[in-house]
Image 1 (cartoon, helix red, strand yellow):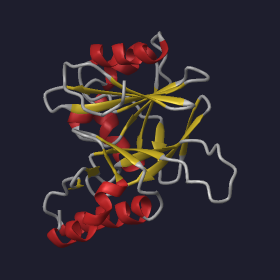
Image 2 (cartoon, one colour):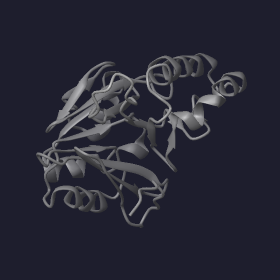
Image 3 (cartoon, one colour):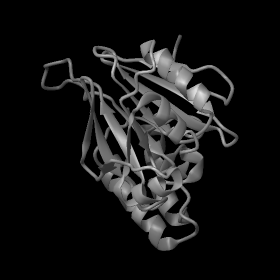
Length: 235
């Protein structure tokens, strides 16, 4: 079945199968938060992006990926409560390492009353079995918001080969149609806009697939023509 990224809370998982990874998308909670499970097909290692709500549903998602409760790491893209409602429960069952942007980690730890041992900064990498995900800090929605970039391996050797696709998990920093909310604060918006342009659009190709924290997926190619419009409107 073709992956569409069209999921609803209470509905089935959508699954994308790559050469080395599987990506599972599910929606949970009253705000329809997206949770993503990334599974290394060679080792069974797994990473969950945003344990937002409904721990039973998320633990079922984990088992869909590996056939067990194996979960190596949970990355929380930012500190807002709707993105970490199931985090304590998922960690308690799986023993997964908790990871979040360094500037949001204290707030997340306080909300959970437990430490966040992996504090991520721009340019860090997370190794999940044979997969490597790059941390892309996107400051503005919150100070410590992070995205994760998973590159498909380059198989072709021809010098004019098409670059491999990037799969980018953006939390609430980038959506179809614009950036994440910055509370009407011009400085926060300017920071987020600059990070998204310099760290995402200037680095990754139009075929980069964007997996946001809520709603439908998109690609950088679909959004790139609207960058000037976003800057002009200020949100």
